[in-house]
Image (cartoon, rainbow, N blue to C red; front, side):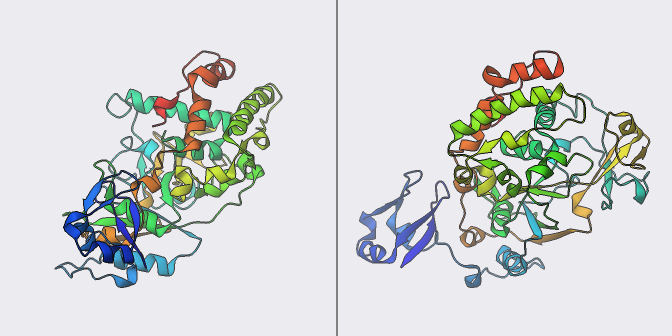
Length: 405
């Protein structure tokens, strides 16, 4: 019988055989188990004690505590039992004190909810609570933040709004959507693992939280990628949108297609508007794409509602009528307060990691060919400088691998 257990050093999920266990149990003090991922040796007595073994949710036996909060296995069991394709999830080791907004906006909104708005002003017609964006200042718009915004603008200009947001998510640049997953287990792992410190949260005064969002899935087609813009963006975009791009056999072919796309994009910019981006030229090796972070995490983006100011009406592509009436600064939706959002909190326990057969290296693979390809494409040594030269009229650094970490 195969037994799943977790390496105590790198937290990878490993497999061992019960028959081999029985043989080693004769003299456990003289044996060790080696992790096939990080090659850490663990005494056999520790492994055979079962303290690193994983369990199924239906085997959960988490000790009862003096708390009204459920355990993670109880929350995860509920999510898995009720799951359907219209649900996506987000796990956090604790609930933030700030509003639940995308990374591109964090630290740049007022902590107090906005009051000067009417329901008809909502761009997407669904937000319940909004926070005004703060005027840019050295305290909320650092150079790093400004650079990331510039790179996101670069991607939007080149690929259009939906594809740019998905590429920005993969690159780690920071998108205008909130990172979510279509997998309850992945969300649960993010809710108990502190990636900053590379440890599981065994206990905490603050409970963990999993958000569940009900969304509608936009059909994954090239035409939708071409026509969706900031104003018409649906609440959710996922991995399937990338799969709408044509397939090829290798990342070398994919890189070539991105360069060919840029040439065709430059030609399209010279024509009379409206701009039609030739996204049908782009190619991705779909089998290899399954090894990327966005695929391993079953990742997607949830986009908040917005309240726009009158400034937007002056742009070359103005918003729908009546959607840019606010004075002052724009406001962004707190996604934790939406009608389509459910918040499930749970108490942390040292047993939680035994019920989720995932590891950090599975969710953030060390070999991510998609990320490598994007780093190549965005490198200043390749396409970046002359993209800015032709599209914006000046030479600038478009980024590169150091911005994609």
